[in-house]
Length: 266
Image (cartoon, rainbow, N blue to C red; front, side, top):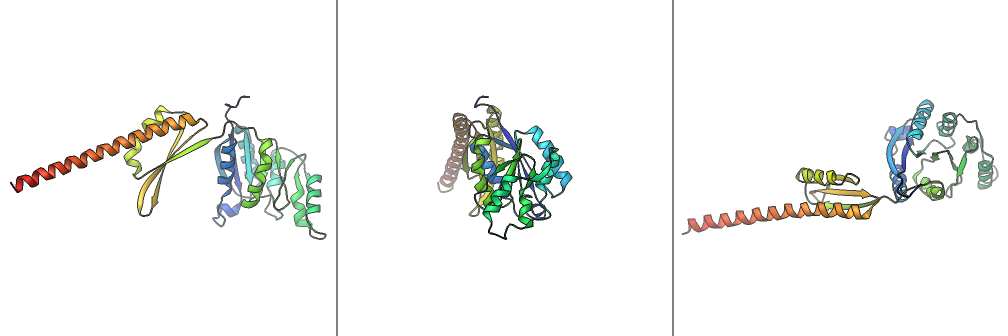
């Protein structure tokens, strides 16, 4: 397997609180940026409810069409935390107490604090690999290419570093942003031409509104810095050409105006 091999992933956000709008998802950005840095491209993101059959069906589909699947949420101590048991059923594995996870949490909590609710967090698919949690103790887990992480953003972020040795990626996915003071319709045709000439580079156009002015951010993404540089040059070239044409029009208008004034006052 060479470094040029492409690797992809899906992110599956599990939780009614996301779908209801009560909680804002930030985990997608965290996971995607981390995956980009190790050469794994996110192909798809889904948000689904805490419903067992939905989790099972979605996981079984995503794990077949992606190198990796990352789930967030549903591995806590309450009744609606059903991700672990759903993953067990998706893989046809026994749902049981993970002895190592039990020891970790038993040591983490003070005497009398490792109650029934917290003990639920050590129930996992049989022979699941633990994902250590340096923030709050309770581990996540992975089965084959499915990695199950908690929904709390700060905890999830702290656990990603421990996964690097388990993820095989390609070249890091690089990006470069060009910010322009224009509107998308003015550059759409030229930008399409650049994309057509560089089909293996991802070019995105994202409008913004700042300080009362419209603008466009053009984001160029690739594993190859030379390809990014080439696209950047082509984009800046048509932008400068457009500026020059606009400047010429202004000059011509000014000259015409002066000619009219001279005629009037002649």
